[in-house]
Length: 464
Image 1: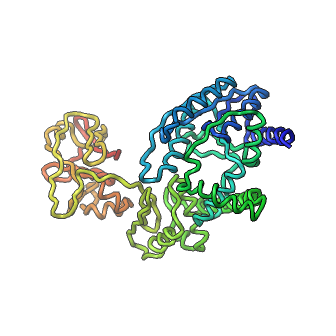
Image 2: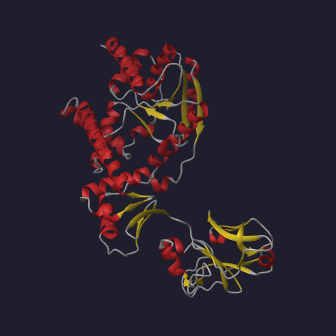
Image 3: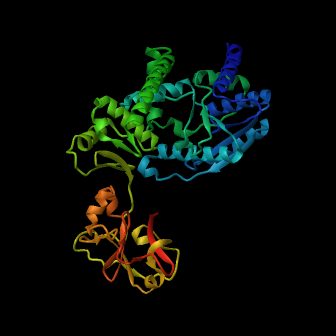
């Protein structure tokens, strides 16, 4: 039996790489933890690379979470040296494990390190040792979490994951997805391959381990071969998700107005279709996927409110806002020092003088003030003689954009320039002796502009 399975495993491996687009003569990398699965992957990839003239690299990520981590790194290095495989390890520090959980933080840092290693060595295809049992565990975990078709799709045989790997040029392939854990164990035994055992894989506090050691054996006894059926279900879910993505792409193209969504078009859709579009919109912006309950609440607040409502819904990664019947995704920005907390928080702004600089940075106001030469602008000598003040809007400011136009309040100008309400609070104004000279997002007051004589300048604001 073993002799019949080994060639089948190698044949499936080659077919999977061909499907992933691996060509002869290119560079190939594998993720090597030193465990049974990745050790089998190392030997299969080594044989394949040798037969096809491919440069093979093995990358190991050292998390430092186990007292045995140094020993695992040494084992991987020795295993690669014995095969003549290029090896490199990278040590990582987990990013906020308390916030996302140790398992999620380790996964995030591990894949980011693997993506960086592949970029450093010019590898465009990264192989991982996920197999059929892993796929079954993934599908079951997603089912227990109440996931939709995207989650129930499980793992793809190959996909690009730039948000995970931080490497847009890299494809991640799983050439062992058709193989069972038992097949890999038999292969390792037959080839006398040494491997390490990560003690955390036996800790039932991790959800995947609880499934692997408690639930899956019971399923195997009651439903032999359930892993293959789970894999088929995952393929059906993948097919359904591809159709949903196609529909979402069409709907997004129809609803997009620049970087925002047309609420009227979104309102005309069924709830299910709107949810599908919004999930896709979030995915294209690389934001965490919201729950169905959150989406329902967002649609209620942002879509069904009155036409002129200025509404805000907070997402963990951004703000979702509505302005003039358009939906915007805006970043969560840090509070600026120059911002008033309330009406009693009186600030006089930041006084400064201009001495001919092309630009002046104002970190308290979140940007840079530029002085651009212009045909019509503020005379250089006059501008140098002024004590200038930069501040955020206090209320009551008025601006005259041209001699043939009326003096209007800033609110009117913001509305005319279609500046959303949330942007207005971060747009500073520049004045001299309490006379407004410039309002970011609107333009220059015309009273002190000249078109003849010495060099003239116009002000321009750039947020950073």
